[in-house]
Image 1 (spheres, rainbow, N blue to C red):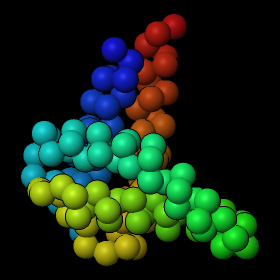
Image 2 (image 1 turned 90 degrees about the vertical axis):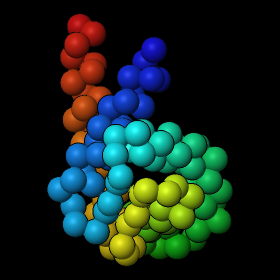
Image 3 (image 1 turned 180 degrees about the vertical axis):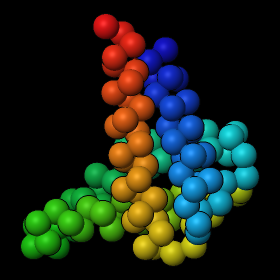
Image 4 (image 1 turned 135 degrees about the vertical axis):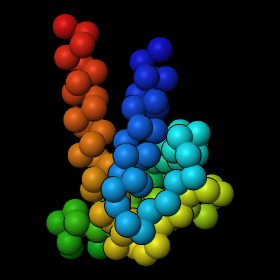
Length: 115
């Protein structure tokens, strides 16, 4: 049940950020849920491979290249999902940062409800 709740919250986060951020378009809430699921799967399988392959540049940039990796994951999700579009890599970086912040806020609210 916890996984479904987190996916629903991630879908809400994607939908809210797409509403406020110019350059990101989501057709509807169902598309936002699909984006949340696809991003979770890509982060599970593709992101570790990209991190290993780009380890030298990640070390040289003191980890800041991970922002670019997150943006590439979002752009890959853009290519895989109809109804979800991101205009540029810089919008994807901003989307990634905002999504991380909003997810941490929503997940912290979820933890407070359990206490």
